[in-house]
Structure formats: C-alpha cells, structure tokens
Length: 435
Ligand SMILES: *Cc1c(COP(=O)(O)O)cnc(C)c1O
Image 1 (cartoon, rainbow, N blue to C red):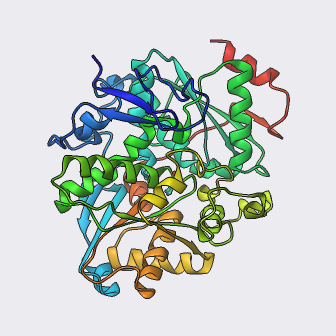
Image 2: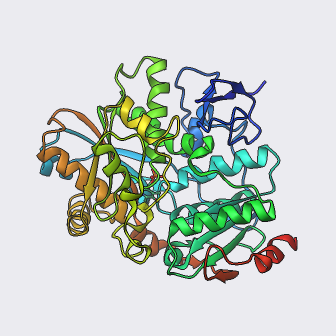
Image 3: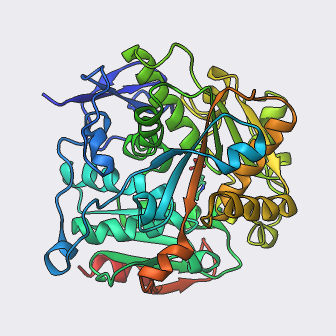
C-alpha cells in the first residue's frame, strides 16, 4: 500500500497516484496529496529528503548518471536553510524575522547549486516520474526551473526536454557537463516570453506525445516547494505568523499553505495558518490586480503588457500570464484561506531592495527575492506586521555570485530554435523521436 493518495479538490475522490495530473471528474481542480503519516517527523538528513514522509515518492532518489563519474558533495540536492536575521531584522525593527534561504551559501550550509527554490521541486518531481515508469518529461520554463531540472535529470539519469525563450537563456546552465540524453533544450527566439514557451510546450506534448511535468498541477512540485515551510518549522519550533514570497504562478504560496495545513493537523506547531504575503513586479501584476478587488478570475485587462516589455521586467521569471489562480486549490483559495495580502513592487524599489538585502545579510539575491524584500518593507511601513510577529521571508534564490567562485557554469545550448510557438514541429519531432 502506498504511503499517500491523491485527492481531487473538485470532486473529493481519492485515487492511487499514477503520475496523475487531472481527475477523471473533468472539473479541473488540483489534486492534493493525502499522506498516511499525519505527524511531522523530519529526519536529521542534510537534504530535502529529510521530509520524505511528506513527499510523493516511495523512496528518495539514489545517485544516477553523474554520480558514477564525479563525486557528489555530501548534502546533494540541498535544502532550504532557515536562520534568524540579525541585521535586516534590526533595520526593520522586527524581533522575529526568519530568512528561508534557497540557494548557494556554503558558509551557511546552503547547497542548492542551481541557486533557487526550483531546486526543491526538481528532485521529488523526477523521482516520482521514475517511480511511475516515465522515461522523460517536458517542461516549459522562464529559466530557473529548467536549470534545476537539468541538473537533477543528470543526477538521477533521467531525460528532460526544456522549452524556453532565448530571453531565458542566461538562466539556463548547470554546474557540471550534462549529456544530451539527459537534457534537450528547444528554444524560441528571444522576442517570445515564458507564456509563449508554455504554449509551444503544450503543442509538443500533444503532437509528439510527450508527458508534461505539469507545473503547479504536479503534487511533487508543490510538496517539494512546501519543504521550505517544513524546514522553517523545524528551525523556529512553530508555524510563522506571516510568509513573504515573490510569485509568478503562485505555486510556492499554495505549497506553503498546504504544508501549513499538514502542520496544523499535527497540532504541535500552532493553530493558525500563516498569512500569505505574495508579491509581483508592479509593471506586470495580474494576481495583485485580481486580488485587490477580491476577484476570483484574472481578466485580459490584467494582462495588457506587451511581450517585448515582459522580457524587460526586473524579475522576468515572475511574468506568468496563465497562473493557477481560479482553479480549486489554487492561488485565490490560498489567499482566501490565509487572509492573504498581495504586493506590487516597482523596478526602482526592487533594485534598491536587492542592495539593501545584500548589504544587511551579506549575500547576493536573485531579482524575485528582492521583490519579496520590497513587500516585507511595505508591510512594515503599513503595519501589516508587528515587531514581535514571527515572520518568514522566503529568499527564493540567491548566492549566484558566491556560486561562481566555486563552480564554472556550463551553459545549456539549444538543439533547435523556433521563431514562433505556432511554427511547424517536424524538426522538433525528428529530434525527439530519434531515440
Ligand atoms: C519561480 C520563482 C519564483 C516564483 O515562484 P512561484 O511560487 O512558482 O510563483 C520566485 N522566485 C524565484 C527565484 C523563482 O525561480
């Protein structure tokens, strides 16, 4: 008997997992994992597999293709590191500010080598796919997800097909050489944004019959990201009152909410869900706009920024035009359940926040993380948080400058580049079908 079932949040049915993304009821709600184990028992391991009981895999991954050739440092694939802030907390007048650092900062034992919390999603997602008999997965990415999955595909000897615009290419690299049998990158010309990559990815999946990884619909991705909150609770000893994160799809926010519900059920870590404080680029803020009016739908009026402007945003990776907002179990439900707040942070503010963070905490952070810092500052100024509240600030990515001191980054190169997401797929098909 499996250690978990999938429950459809539209019809309530509980089923055995077969890498299932959609319920046969056809109502479109998310699945959520229901684990047999109701109490929280993290192991002492130094990787995210310490939360294995609440990840949708039967066993943690063993080391695959790269491991045979190259020594993998202890602690791969890393995990979130949570610590109590001294300097940033002091600057903001916060007595209980905890930082969830997702990235590379070996001095603090932070060893996600791909530098963002997408490194929490890739290991359980690929492991789940292997256990369910899949040979490969396709994912569309704004860069950070592609990088995390590429690195992990090599480690677990799996195959990922990455679909991304060339505007994301600077974010596509690995820390070691990977083989083409593990990573195949299909590119779009740089005039395309992430949403066009999603469109092309969908076409490839349906026309060439390749399994999609599923994004937010994939319980392994959400539960993987949820380990960030689990890690925080092991460090703090209780649930935080507030959770700050920059979002594009909002998957991380949903994941924090779901992990918090599991901890409430355990009972030892508090009785109240953390309030979600989620942030976007001010210049492109569909979820912010919709939530401001408590609308359960995103409309076209929320999405007016032209594609060429999207690729110029401060945090382009947050520019998702089709987030899982209205779906049962999606962002609207998460914000409603936690009486959440949305923030929109301008480019100039975010640039200042990036400097503010690195000068107080002494580590570089990626653009989305600076947007989350901006949200925290705004919340302090508007008294949405109190000095003694327990606050968790999710630094979703950081330490890339630090990483470059230790690693030579290997760019992931496109096998083929298309102009437009609706281009014919003959050549792509040949590339993907040949093996
Ligand atoms: C993907 C990503 C986000 C947004 O995450 P979602 O919760 O999926 O919207 C934020 N920061 C970084 C660094 C990311 O890579």
